[in-house]
Structures are given as C-alpha cells and as structure tokens.
Length: 176
Image (cartoon, rainbow, N blue to C red):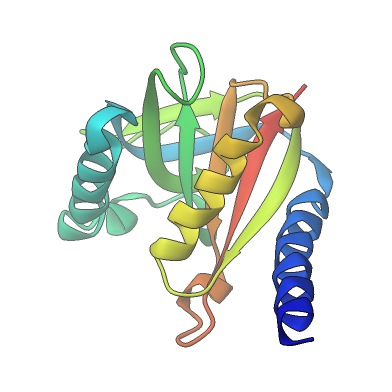
C-alpha cells in the first residue's frame, strides 16, 4: 500500500509539472523597442551563465537604468535574439527597457526594434535565478513541440520579480 501511495504521489508530481508546461498561453505582441546593453554568447560549456551574469552586473553597476530617459515602463527586459541556429548555438542577449522610440539612444547603449510575433508564456516562480534556469531547461527539453521561431524570446522582470519570498519572472518564447 505504501509503495502504491508513493507511486501515485510521484505520478501526480510528474503530471502536475507536465500540466504546468502545457498550460501556457499564446500571447500576441506589438513591436518592441528596447534600449540597453548586449552581449553575444552561447549555452555551451556554461558560457551564457558567465556572460549574462556579467551583463547584469554591468547593467546595474554602470547605472544603465538611469541613462535611459524615455522608458515606456519600469519592467526590465532580457531579450534573446540573433540565434545562430537554436538554443545550442550562439545568440545575443539584450538587457534593457522598452522605450517609446529609438530616436535618442544614449552613447554606449544599443537600441533595437523587435518585430511582432506570437509567444508562449511561461512563468518562473521561486528562488531566483534558479527558478529561471529550471524553466529554461523545461523549455529546451520541449523545444521540438514548442515550434520555436528563434527570432527572439524575452524575460520580463516586472514588479513580481522583486516579490521577496515569492518572486516571479515571465518568459515569452517566440513561436511559429
């Protein structure tokens, strides 16, 4: 009986994880103008963790938020784009803010427009950045069934990302 209960508990845990992965909403989006800083990287050999960690360090260490004057909101965007192939190849990461226009890009920063596309939305919840890493691992494990576009994906760090004990970060995956 105890083994039966343990097996049922295990199956429910697996099923719940699968349901959470499938319970993603298709999100249409308008054009996205971003000003911030960027780095080219790859997921091979842990390089992205190092490069993106350093990029976040620069973002706050050099007060990039204070240099962007025409923000369209307080949310921070981490955009993944220029994919060489898929998540195993090289790509570019931008960290910055959505802005009203790219007419005045501060010196040393990069401005870029990302065209509209469809997204599937995932939400990373829990201890950061581990929850984000785990969510990306789920996305990569389901790469083929997601029908990713590999034009761009992004993480959205809104008010809930600063929610102390229960932070949340939304991850939008571009799909065909």
